[in-house]
Length: 350
Ligand code: TRP
Image (tube, rainbow, N blue to C red; front, side, top):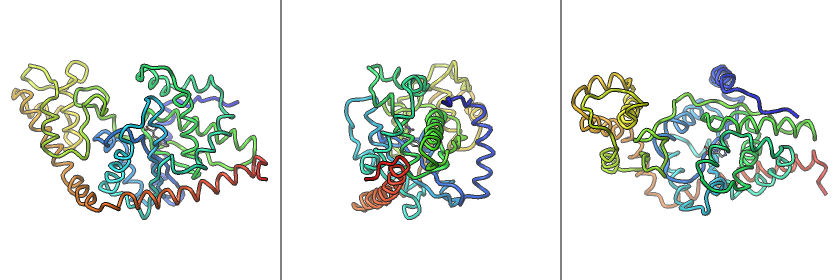
């Protein structure tokens, strides 16, 4: 059996060559990417993945976006406000520039044939391999509870997400690289065992650095350190005001020793395009009050147009439901066809 051996550096190197090829030949690629609808989309999602999706979509690459609702319950008991989260994510995609006529936006739970692919795929993976997945390990540690079988096996489920539509390009952040590698292994093993059905998709590493949460930890709604795209300007100001900084008046960029101050500088930097060190020098001795004011203005200015479009789109009560219905229909048609190919290859058509 082949193993998951790809190093991060090799993938990063391959990714930049790949990015150039995608720009030159967008018609050769089909993207599948998405997220877990666990909360509102925030700035981390925006810089990390949404902006990149919009860029690729604008290049003319065929785009599928999954709202992975089954993945929500990998590390928790309930689905929470999943309907609301899905609804809000669709509004954010649209406000960010995704055109639903050219992109298929769909949910796991509405596409049975996609989920059925998980069964043959599970047979192609060993338990030891799943236990070695570094992202699963990290998520298990963060969950602080027993490892659910769904958390252990979700990379296989993610392979079904990617392969059901025979996507060959998966734009992801670093965390998801092991899953794309696992998907490649599954595609290869399936094809070896049953005949050629699946492409081996490539990961396109998103170039934006991870956006820290306001306190310097990973940006996450559950830490209360995330600026969500849908917040109002006032809510953004209030959240930034509550960010813990320090009493040193001179503002410097030092992520290790001054996580709060540096996270604010990074956030302002991403929104203004000015280096964090330059912003720090501009603020100088004016202290964290001035830093917070500058960051608030930077974020609110950057998100103003997105938020205005979002508010406008949200006025139509049927828009999101219609888009999801169409997306789920398209996804089902493709998943049914792929499942038929899989069953034909496996000899299980009766
Ligand atoms: N695991 C991804 C995340 O949380 C979400 C996801 C589910 C995904 N299925 C996918 C990403 C398929 C890319 C391709 O970020």
